[in-house]
Amino acid sequence: MATIVISEFMDEAAVARLKEAHATVYDPALVDRPDDLAGLLADCRALVVRNRTQVRGALLEAAAKLEVVGRLGVGLDNIDLDACGERGIEVCPASGANDLSVVEYVIATAMMLLRGAYHSKEAMLAGEWPRGRLMGGELSGRCMGLVGLGSIARGVAAKARALGMEVIAHDPFVSVHDPAWDGLGHRGLDALFAEADVVSLHVPLTEGTRHLVNGDRLAAMREGSILINAARGGVVDEHALAAALRSGPLAGAALDVFENEPLGRDAAAILAGIDNLILTPHIAGVTGESNVRVSSVTADNVLAVLSRAR
Image (cartoon, rainbow, N blue to C red):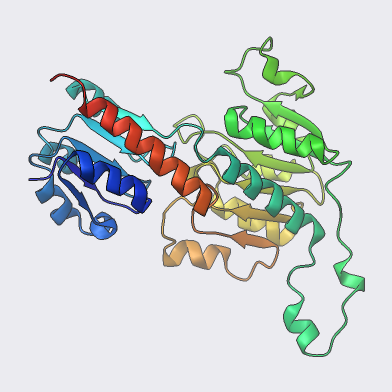
């Protein structure tokens, strides 16, 4: 009878803290064995997940005593928040704990895509010296466009400005009087796509943001611009993105998130053969350092809820 079940990977020190306080089952492979996971939840008071465990439907029904879901990260689209709210189950994201990792991912991939000189190993080992075709560009002096102005986007803005970039942003949910706008240009969404050299997405996946980046917006982007998505996969129409990368105007893109994860054959076929595309498996927010921070915050959140008088 476990009080806490952890279905995806977590820092061992944080797991040890949970085990000291409560009976805990830690099995990162449970996410791929939903029947086993459901069987462990009958007497479970806390469930700890990342983004792959779908906390909804039959899984929630199996967890009759569940009091808290600890999210090792910040995205909540894999959790049925309405159902949790109806049952009084607290959902606790690790807000802010992996911001820096995502910020650095955005800046790093922007540099790699603009420089365009990181795919020359095979040519050089074959005896070529392809200097002429590998003259890329610099971030400094270019325009960074941020779709969304939450904490991660604000971190990107600070790094981008430090590197000499102009930064513009769009976020209808942040008041124009918020200090976060200091030093940033305020733009409408379509104007941002038309003006920015680098567009970085920082919005949750909702019905309002699904396929926010579509064929029309991609076609409106500047020649030679790049797109970075380390937010949520469904925000980008992958078919439209592949077309824009193959025929312009985009010079490159970095995707850390996808409409379906892991990638299925259809998505792989859509994105195959595109050289100016960086693909990573939802790891923008996952570094050794951020895993420690995220896991520690999540353990704190779960222990705080379980410590309350029932």
